[in-house]
Length: 361
Figure: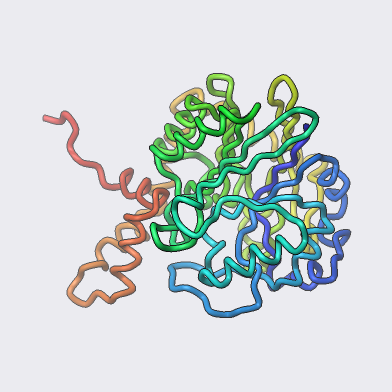
């Protein structure tokens, strides 16, 4: 069985017209034949497919694309989408319902969402040539996660997620976890994220792929399992972000599943309003940097990279703490701080910046 797993993809205001027209050549260039050379093509749909415009309140952008945009997604060859992310319910339960209906109409599968925090834990099973693969799709706690009586994305939980992985392992030849989390624009995992991903492997995951950071991170093999801390973007074109070099590239991961799980990393980069395969020096530089960071996971260098990133964000994070309950604080100040406590990636940064005593004299 061959699976192509892609990072964040969403038709944007810049290229939505190409998706609506089904112009996959302009969107995916020479990536297209490689993308379609698989039994299953899975992407992270980073937003809602809806024509409604009733965004939820949140700190950060509300992402959506028109329902007509599904034409380009279908024509490109996507068979399934992971919806456990921080944007799938940006336009409320109605927008999520539109997304599901739109995908179903085109025969595209989905996973990672449900009408409550129990049903959102659905496991997606793929079968081909006697091989059964389970996809466990989870996200961190960032606005759109499901609750007891609220539809939404499947929230990662250090207890129930491990149970779901164990259940999947009993019913499938291979278990793949797609984890939407980690700190945006950070090339390294937090200590908590590294520990969590390794725990998922110990509980039965054959591979864990972290998305959401919008940059290519690093990778390791752990107890026979494969972990990628940051696959980067796939096709998330925003002209306003074009000055951010990390935003311009991503890794498509090709999985060959037979007697074992083999990975092939295929770097892609932006071209015009779409993407193309990275080539020549650009490909070499991307893969060398990816390899170097991966080697740093074997030493303390990765944690130094994480700490340096956190300290580069000190004004933003400690500024949010200071404003939250100051005399002139606003509801927005308090809600943003509460969000930082709710979401694992933000809390990871605060834990690094705000150290308590530990066996100090």
